[in-house]
Length: 242
Ligand SMILES: Nc1ncnc2c1ncn2[C@@H]1O[C@H](COP(=O)(O)OP(=O)(O)OP(=O)(O)O)[C@@H](O)[C@H]1O
Ligand SMILES: [Mg+2]
Image (tube, rainbow, N blue to C red; front, side, top):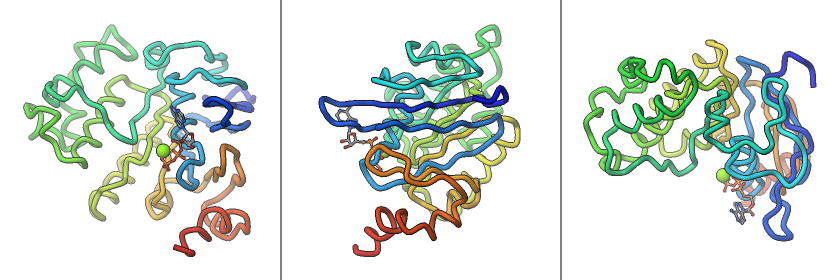
């Protein structure tokens, strides 16, 4: 792995019983880069995020972060190193307020010396300031996604893994979210963005990996992916077939 890579994933394998949800995935990412991860349902995208964030220990391969192999580290240890993620289905502390959820994450993540850091700017950036005293369970699904992102960002990640953040957002919200994530990358955060909505990815990144059945079948620009015969067959072709 070249030294400037922040994240290096090498031949990653994750099995559930005899089934290989990840079957030897490799890629790398530099600070400030955005990598899109696309593929049909069940192709292993969320499993990839779960394995990099430490929710699942890998059954093979290596995850390197800032030059260090982190295979055995628990998610909270990875959060302190600077890795965090959003969830395909957000899971806030339902009975706590928005502010309490974000404050807890801030206290738990990186730079704990700054645990008392002001979370107000983050709430405002994510349009959660007017909802700050509302309980998480009372938010709609788009607001829960905003909260989940705020929670992840409160730990001050250097690597942010986002899992279908755009699902359920209206077109204006989608555009704002894509621009917000692009701004995070500009500030130096590396992003892995799992997304079915190619228009959303197109606003954010050029480079995508297309997965199928736990393997990477394509890496390159989004435009090239949509012209690749195998990608069209496994991903777009299936959609076109209805
Ligand atoms: N905890 C688990 N136990 C058993 N099987 C799992 C588990 N998590 C994922 N799988 C299986 O691994 C495969 C990959 O799932 P994964 O959730 O990573 O897919 P995905 O690409 O994120 O799909 P989607 O687009 O539907 O979110 C699927 O066949 C899924 O059923
Ligand atoms: Mg998924």
